[in-house]
Image 1: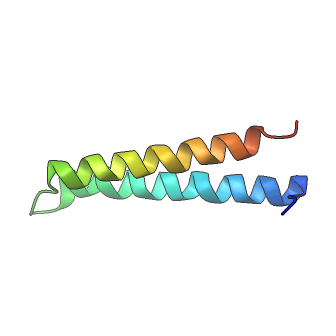
Image 2: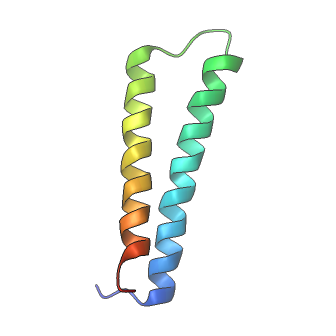
Image 3: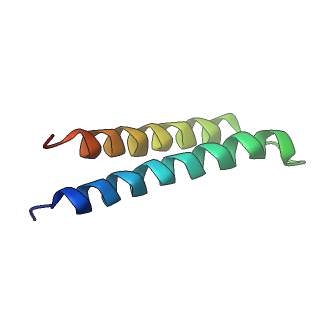
Length: 64
C-alpha cells in the first residue's frame, strides 16, 4: 500500500504517541503503584517502547 505524505505523517504520530503512552505508564507505574512492576515487565515495556519509537521515526523520515 502506497502511503501519501499526510497518511505517513499521521501513522508516524500514532506510533510515537503509543511509545509515549507506554513509556509514561510504566515509568509512572513504577513509582505510583503500591505493588511494584517486575523487572521483566519493565524491560519488555521498554523494548516495546523502543520498537514503536523507532518505527515512528522511520516512517516519519521516509520520502523527504
